[in-house]
Length: 275
Image (tube, rainbow, N blue to C red):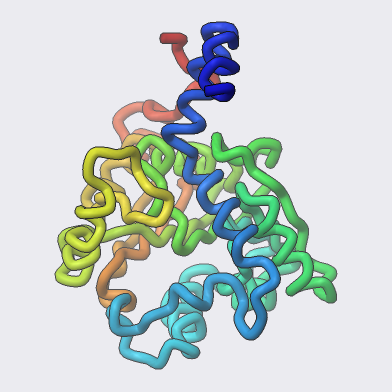
């Protein structure tokens, strides 16, 4: 009762914000809670518990999945960029594969607890920097300062507005000709549909849970990139058969042959209309 009375006495705008945070915690808040709960557990790095070769549809043992994706996707597409931005580094599962490929790795996450685990794991690596994101974009990363962007096991969880917003931000921070590897859901693959059905029960009549997969397809990703004047070079669905790994490139310049009708027709404004 004391909590209810305290909320009632808040100013209207603060009341609404408080209620939203109680009823519908953000995805970032959900993963922060997960990481804090994980801290102190020994024997595994955070993220290792999510690896299941059978569920993912990968034809190698679980301990070889990162190497398999590195050899078949990351290496052939990225080669050796100078600066890599990793969105949602988590416990550093893919960070180990990215570090040898670049001069500098910018590891980002919306969870302070995740970044704490990262700093402990990679304490002796001088070419890695850490940045806490607010879930609203890639601020304060400067425009045209990143050669390559990588994200795995992040876009499967965030909603379409966030996916589009992050793609817009990726376009902003990439140098002309820069590349991005984005792993996301492929709901209508056989294994993707199995995951969708598993998420139905826990998701009914409530806001999205942080760990559930967002309904997504290669076709939606293609349309998002087109509207942001990005080039979707490939949609890989045979490496991790449950999901899709999109290979994206920023044009060297915006011309009449860019993937959208008008240059930057889908770029987002940094301000949102008030409701």
